Length: 162
Image 1 (cartoon, helix red, strand yellow):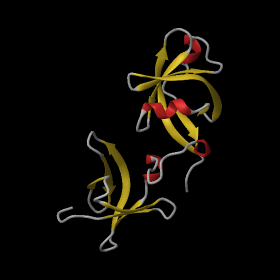
Image 2 (spheres, helix red, strand yellow; image 1 turned 90 degrees about the horizontal axis):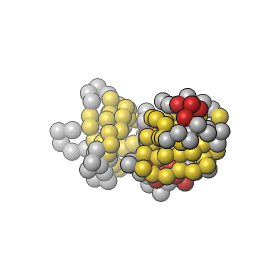
Image 3 (tube, helix red, strand yellow; image 1 turned 120 degrees about the horizontal axis):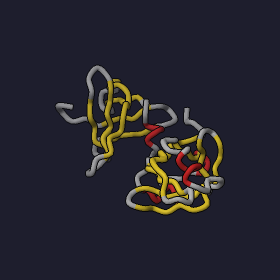
């Protein structure tokens, strides 16, 4: 079952002396985080006053965080987004929704295990499947037959030797 919130990044540092924070985004592009009015920290909504991309991170000014002392208290906190406020392209999925899905061989219906991790590599993402043995499967159309988040599985087209 999908959670109502998505982990979107981590506050890794302060930025300047006016309370801005540096967020390491957990998204395909850092700009994804700049399109929101609020995020959630420790279960509480926090209004985003401004957000901009800077060197692969997001520099954000948050409501109520006005100086370096209040910003430093947020360091290492995970930021979340309300799932109802997020939108991605058709056929794309949040990594959080892929974790734990059953991995199934599309040809034989054999259960390969479950999606344990998604590696973000330069050429493409790679699914790490934990089962009787660990399998690495590129996250490209040639290997993915079907992704069904609601039913809890991904069907893969495997090649000999996988």
